[in-house]
View 1 (cartoon, rainbow, N blue to C red):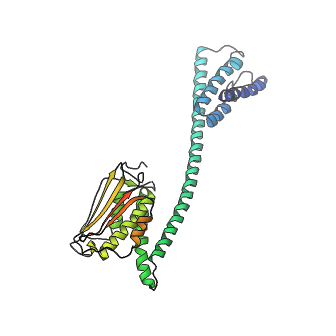
View 2: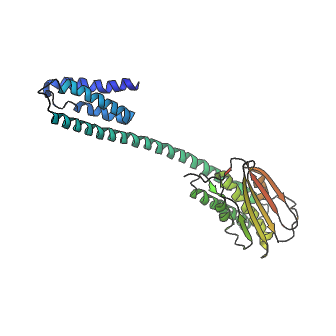
View 3: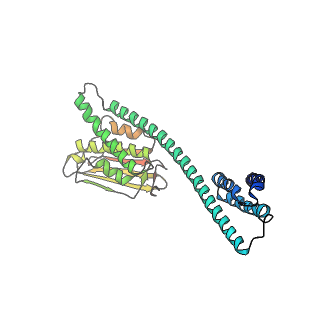
Length: 305
């Protein structure tokens, strides 16, 4: 098919040039081939356009130059070839640049459509999550002030997760950066964190945000962060066999008793599909929570932007 197009791209302007020969008598032997070379470069690329240019040069030289008028001198041959090659090179480069520009534009439009679709999907997910948070925060007999006091910090935590994801271009987020953003409102000197550089997927980033916010809120109200000497240690590790493991460990706080009912944080942890395993423990010296992410939800390799 490619060879057939190249033959047509040479034959069609040759017929046009033959039709004009009685009027121009051997002059401008290659002009009729310029549009064909340009169109070939635009639609098929520079390699096919180069083949058309070479074929056009041979045909034009044999049919319209060597058989008409006096023989060329050596200087005229060199000058003619130089002009022909230079002109064809400019035409091919221009056509190939147009071809790349059109392809890049098509790719940009496709990416824009994909991003618009993804943005709509994420907006629906965020609205659904906010609605779920509102339902979870609502309690019978609760005043509007109490309701908003329970809801707004969770929405703000979700907004901070969006900031971290936006900086990561929504491909992934850095776990340390996420932890620092979530715990920023809880300014307690006993908070410490340690772990390797790990990037996690957007859905997991949002889930961890809500979970860590709930753990920190409970620690501030009832646990280690409620006392000046209390400590919260947040550690994470990456293991090829079991994915990323995040550990929340409280110490030096009030004596701990197992809760009589599951709170919002526990429900968020247990229901999210990104968590392979969750383990809560309530020793007297402090609450501990171990969260294992499913394999593929986290990576030690930095994301490529």
